[in-house]
Image: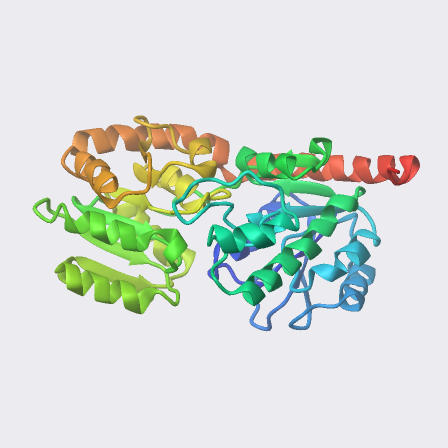
Length: 393
């Protein structure tokens, strides 16, 4: 099969979406498929596939030119700087659109109120009022309007019936259902983690928190939690970067734990692998409703227990009490209790790690590629079916 992917960057270490895209290219190539990647930046690191650089915004003409040169059986869209070109892409031939986040049906992307209550409203004009009244979108009406218009453009996908939709979790599929999408068009394709490149001895008390440093990821809550268990031996390594880093570093100093917290910055997957292998446990303090969470399946791959807040897709890769601890609510105190429980019980950590490795089988790369190719085959059949049936009136 010939597959043309459309992504943001042709680099693996610039966020979860980019890792998924580049590693999907690798997995499909290993499985014998011909792969092309159209990307929006000029610093490619992917090799062994056909690359097509798009301008910063990406135009329909550029994608059409890449399509004509590569001649794919189908296109898989992961990212578009300009969602207005999606109808033109779908018009080129069989298309699958992988939705990585909830901005496709929520203007502010999280479908949560400021107090972390999940929202189940479908995207519509009423969201403009709710964003302001609930403050889930902030207090700047013009900013809310801009976000709403962007999601409104993405929502055009609902009417592009010949395109199939791929999501990584049942949680994301439920959001589509609540927004009136036809579920027969939707494939749930859980993501994956590469197997550990090498083993390493676990360091007692080493806690790993891989995350972008933005408030929605909850790193500030994790720091508050760690400060309450300072009598327990621990060292926290935070892998990632973002505009919130300066505030987080100041918070660690204010809490008196700066000497036990290491900000690693953004590191490539190969470097992160070493930290996973050495850690005793992994933290996932994300405050939003997470569409999937690569950290979860990476923890399974490395055989590490994880502490995570409940909600979103967490329940789809965390088996509470077996592979980690799920924390209800969003409080630092509750998170601290779970962390201390594992740090002070190495034997339980080891047992959870063994269980995690067993559960990892469902999230291995070859399992993911198998599910993805099956979805692509449905995409080809769906395109033929909808061409025969025609648009719904």
